[in-house]
Image (cartoon, rainbow, N blue to C red; front, side, top):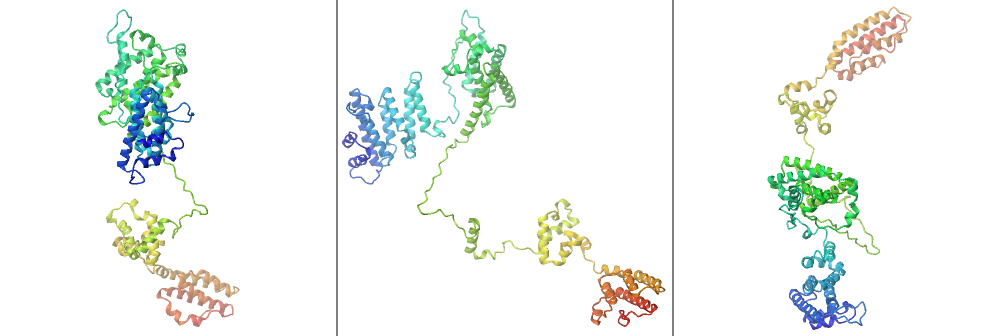
Length: 608
């Protein structure tokens, strides 16, 4: 203890002797930072020393915060108690001792001091607010500081020490974060101790509707505890009493002259704790616009509580009660708007306050989440070094991770569960089932309506089934389906029918030959017609039935002799074309003889 007594009497910065004083007091010190038993020993010694200093200041009749300060010292000098608190605060801030030690000393000091000295002590607390509010100290001593402030508020008079009470509340508002749950009325408990007393018996020689007087002040019971109105019986009683008051306000409207006598600016400057409840003042209070506004605003607050969401099932209002609340609320707002002066502006301000109150209710029901966001730490880059972005093997983190997994698992590429090209029959099986009439699947749900499915199927067919892929032109997407998947009746519609064109060509051969003979007979007497022109007309008159017949006609007209191999390659379906070639060659020969010339371009032997 003597070490700290000498320390607080030293001049100069605290950093030069604070840690050395602790080391001298605790010998031998186990670690650089005090352990639990060493902290407890140091705390007990400091609390004893503080008690002795307070006792000495009381005996010398000096103020606690000025005890030990000499008259010759300058203004910067401190008393012994503030000096001791500064030393302990420095040790707590540097984490040499337990962080909650300074808060414990402040609580002991306020408990041992009078209210006059507590103002000076609280001034010291306010001056060290930034240091006490640091996270490493706040987390260890916030409950002790809250307890200290609440004890001070209980000892203070709400009527005589209003300023000091305000200082304490302002300190708590700055010291604790906005989302601190200890300062929030989580359960929404009402202050039922605020009871409004009024006359129960009618006084003599007063001309007043005493029933109206009792009805007016009986509403304060419900305004003090709005949860009473959740009972159906209590609600009916409150509703009837409220209608009496509202009808009285509506029957006695206030003029602008009466309202201007009590202006809003002057009203804000006044200080009224509660209205007087004497029955003699009832007539004057009814003419006071401020009194009316207080009553009407209390009604809106009560309605807002009843409409607030998040209540339990037992606290929910019925549908009939909701309708009644809505009608009463509209009536109250109408009266507020009519109350001079500036009734509309006042109503707008009240609605804005009630709307903000809903946000606080939701915040409490959500568990009071913190509003503060932790600042982003700016990491300083070393001189000469540049912050480099991470480089990935395949461009980004996800692809590089996938590649890494494949390297670690060689069987991934041969896994049968991997995505692979399906067999042609497996892929078109759903569409084949849609085409089966016995399945009775509606057309809207057919797979052919899915463009992606059809596009993928065409790609699969182009690789695995060219025959089916070629049927897409004639039969559409349903023609691409393998025939073995289709039922017999549907398969016959999409099955290919070869040689259809050849059969049609055979049917049209006699018609083409007869037309050629007739044209040749008509052209024979015309000796003046050139043989070349006749050959051209005949070629135009013969309609080629298929590609093979067209090729034969072209070869004959150009006097090109077909080889035996070409005759062998021609199918039986080309007989009609060859016969048409014979007719054309005979006609050209006759035309040449009539003209006295033989067409050298026609090789009759080759044709024969």
